[in-house]
Image (cartoon, rainbow, N blue to C red; front, side, top):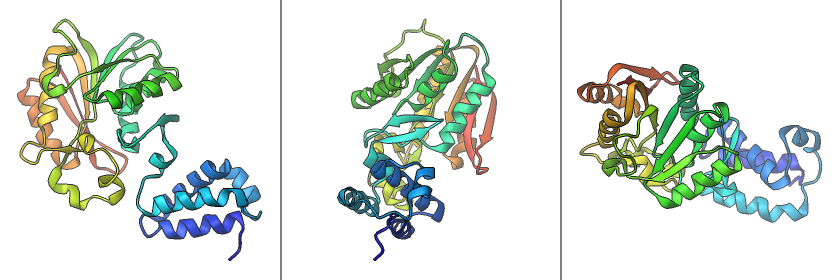
Length: 284
């Protein structure tokens, strides 16, 4: 076979197409090029006809084997892009999604005050609070997660991105991190919302590698986290403050009704870029 950089790239793309879409396959292959060869897309285009470096073949092959086993490229290289920033990730935290970037953008577009106190519940990699802090440096931002291992990663990401966030370990189903005097202007959460019964419909790269604790809710009570978030907001959201949550598209109306029953108002369902119901927001 031809041993050019371009031939390695094209062969990897073709192999990845057995798992991913054409666009995803090419995007992943470019990430491998960047990681293994330290080439930008521009540098790749300039050097694609050059012989593939012999010293890099072993590393490339190792990544290829892991990718073809459906392991996400972000876990393999240890980082993910989100909102123009780099975040460390491992299989303790979800890989940040484009839909969650839309949640961050919505919060930024609707909250222009110089001083805002904000809480992110179930922060994972810390992508939401860190991205917000980078755009609104004067905001006072808090973030919680049930897992200490997760909080270590989130703290690293805040440090690496020079974002001052207060991280606290807490279980939203039995919250003890804040007393009733702790109030927030904005509360945001991307909680587990996929019923366990849907696990067999999911791609291997998600169900076999990403943390189930952050993905799945109980089949008999899939809205349990939204219930506790709403009850928490009743106590800790300032009057006229706003709650933003990411949702499973099929539960949009159920989450809205739940919030209404918890005396939240001005409830809106917002679609994502793919026209799927993705965010519910409400005021207290």
